[in-house]
Length: 138
Image 1 (cartoon, rainbow, N blue to C red):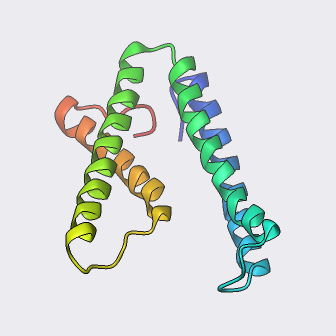
Image 2 (cartoon, one colour):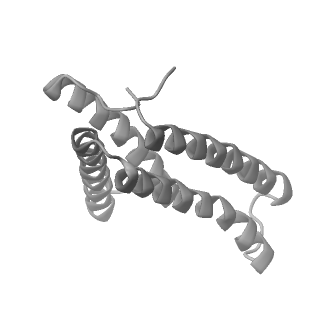
């Protein structure tokens, strides 16, 4: 698999490293934090560490946008992120309103970022279907 530019190669390298770190931190938290643990400072710290990786992913995406030299490819990435945001806000806002008025299960906040990531994939598909190009990682 080859990528078109240096910014994309850097993005993929950092993203994969952060993904490995995220999985390791979630596994460590799962091993060391018992189910229904009291919210002690150590438990909260262990639980929040993977969230710092999420910040790293978002920083990496922003860095990709800043470092991309091709305006067209940058537009595809921005468009993909806008679709992801629209999908996420629609799902979370809609589900939240249904929760408000009906006795349904709550959507855990943890799922907001994974929904956004699925939205990125859908945004890339929308780019491919409407513009004929999915972008640098298609």
